[in-house]
Image 1 (cartoon, helix red, strand yellow):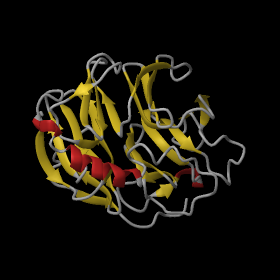
Image 2 (cartoon, one colour; image 1 turned 90 degrees about the horizontal axis):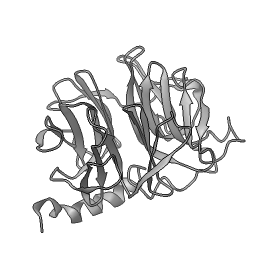
Image 3 (cartoon, helix red, strand yellow; image 1 turned 45 degrees about the horizontal axis):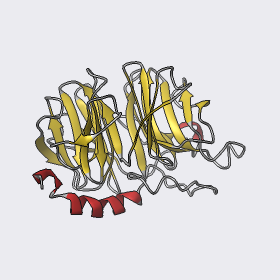
Length: 292
């Protein structure tokens, strides 16, 4: 048995615990039918940086939060939308999915499909698959939107900004990334370990990389991921080799990169930042958000 599968039992055990936080499949397919209590910046599903102003955003069970460099986060539009899949694709332009705020938007279906915001999350418009899909992971690369629907385990792509979708593969995953310089290359984190696709997500094979939980890949020379214990691994050669750097010492929820910075959310610990490639981390936020 290849060495990369020696961690299989440990990853499977962590898979169960991460399901409770909505990271791994199994937790998100339960549709919320009642308003959630205000948990603030907890259960982070996605992190990304708005190029309009460099501000970090966190998509959570309890709404979308704007997290400034100093001061407390604020909930965008005071909306407690359970934003699952989340990515920023341009200045003030966000893509999202998940479940609506039951009090503010009682007429919306429980599964929001693909949504788009062009005002930094102040308002959202449905693009497609409303009532049909619950994307837990969204990416945009090479003019294509990639989405993974947690209800059906379908990895799908849209070449027309989310209007129509094509099926690529069916697999259970926690996170995935698309090669920034090669649309044929994808990596996916699963309970079986790290998987790689060389045919644009149509098929996946085991990779020699570490057993990771969340991934980020915005530069060709900077593929990064956190393992289930919070250790940061980086690859400068497209995933052929990996280097272990620092550790956050907890269960990761999300990671993103921006220029020379890394940002990561860790369950029950907060949101952290690193300016040295993940070797050391500083606490960016852990506490109560400001009123929004």
